[in-house]
Image 1 (cartoon, one colour):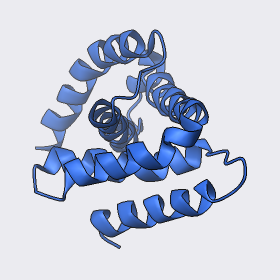
Image 2 (tube, one colour):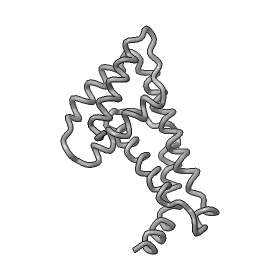
Image 3 (tube, one colour):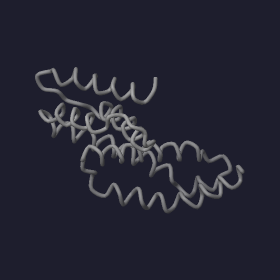
Length: 149
């Protein structure tokens, strides 16, 4: 399944949820929208971003607070996945999984870009946590990439 289709499917799922009397989106709904939206935006290819943002804004307006909580929870968990994997005790080991940590950071970046596009607020302190982890991770990742070349 391509990213555009995954995004359309996620929006369709959210539309079905919105038909309920009291819709409660979960972090999984947020994840399924944020990752493909942010990834598509980062690619820079046209995909109808403005229309999609309008559609999502209108769709989530009746349960905006619950939607924002779902997005915040997803961001906090994605941040924790990345930040906790940036541990210098483990990054010094020969078998440390740099590909996993880099992939977690890329998915987090997609979520953050999507949040920017959708004007979703980031949980307090999240940017600082990511910035600190990036500062620690960058030199280890660079050394790892040099050894792979």
